[in-house]
Amino acid sequence: MTKLTRRTFNGLLGTAGLVSAFGISGCANGPAGPHVVVVGGGFGGATAAKYIRRRDPNMRVTLIESSKVFHTCPFSNAVLAGFKDMAYITKSYDRLASAHGVNVVNDTVVAIDPAKKTVTTKGGATFTYDRCIVSPGIDFKWGALPGYDQAASEIMPHAWKAGAQTALLRKQLEAMPDGGVFVISSPGNPYRCPPGPYERAGLVAWYFKQKKPKSKILILDSKDAFAKQKLFMEGWDKAYGEMIEWVPANKNGKVLKVDAKGMVVETDFDKHKASVANVIPPQQAGAIAFAAGLTDDSGFCPIDPVTFESTRQKGIHVIGDACIAGAMPKSGYSASSQGKVAAAAVIDLLNGRKPVAPSFINTCYSLIAPDYGISVAAVYEVADGKIAGVKGSGGVSPAGANYQFRKKEADFAEGWYASVSQDCWG
Amino acid sequence: MKGRLAIPTIALAATLAVPAIAQADTRISIMADACNGCHGTDAASPGSMPGFSNKKADAIKKALMEYKAGTKEATIMNRIVKAYSDADLAAMANYFAAKNAK
Image (tube, each protein chain N blue to C red):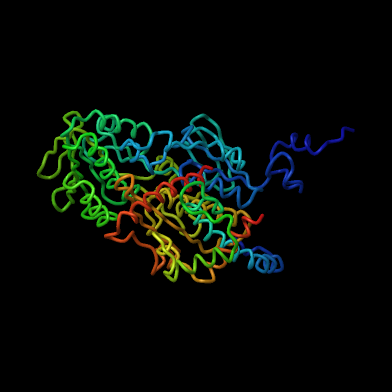
């Protein structure tokens, strides 16, 4: 009779899940616990994958992401302004695999079956999961703004997913003659990165001030107010004088229509001819959230605030920009913080334990110039079934602070970026 | 909790007794891990943000309490630290120190 060694035994069984049932988990063939499939490798998904493995090395984690590398939206405005390059905002998945034992798969998820607990990819692979975490980020509502479709975004870039769009907008800004008008169309709430359009205005102004000082920046807004508004306006005024003009919705700022070929952006009463136009369109959850039936009428995904499990599909958790997370803004730091909470909850649920009351942080820096930073921070908890800011804490940088304070926050912005990048992908 | 009613009483009692401590640890670890976004995983900051992976629990506690009291100069920690009770701050300091003592 042939004697089976542990190694050949595992090899013959072929299924790590079965191995653990025989009580020989923790062997050289890797973890043998439940399998979690994470869909999407941005701030949320990468963090969830890493933190599941950190918390419980017995868990098997597969991360499926359609891009080979990830370009972060944070600091993409610095790439537009020319003081950081594309390499700076490019993140690799190598360490999630090598240092954390995550099975990273480069493919696009096209379907999730909550009954069969399977995930199917464009490449034709099927993965079985015990729990699934979906972190697809945002997609654009093409056509919701008349005239603005995918073809128009090649002429008037959104640059609201970093990468090729960032490079395109940078090229246009570089080619723009001095004295040109750069128009930013800022969307209504909710959207990814609430202070992002305003950081963009300031950093492009920084670039214009040096290379094309007669140029103008016009922000046409679908809102009447925006994040860190007082601080942005104080900073713009100090650093760029009249260069930036902000037009709120109630002063005819809401863009209703664009003509990409004519480079015209239309509001109710005005037509603005742009030299370069950055149209940030209305948004919704990433495509897979719709395909998997995770969205509600808002276009985003309702979730249980403690576990991030979808209220629509059992066994599937949704984190990051795609989910409806109460008072938390749609930001990279929020997504990562939610990824950690979802990781712990998924481990607890798979081990038959009750998930604990979660705690979150969002910390967000914005730059007005490379040496002028402002911030907003908040700690969140679940109160009365909703994610809400902890009372008596959080808030924005002080108004009227001196140069040293703003410079310090700008330095911390870079430190924040180094840390959050390491915490998600490192 | 629906669907769990079939668990025998003895097994249920056992799972409730042990995780009481584990749950408290999990709560603090979740709370503390949220800090890693700014300070690096296990507070080993790779950049210009202050890290504290080489600090003892008492030193971390002292800094946190000073931020809370407003006696330590801060740009952002003063806004964040107010969200936590003194006991949770102390527990988080212990958590970070223990992680990095390993």
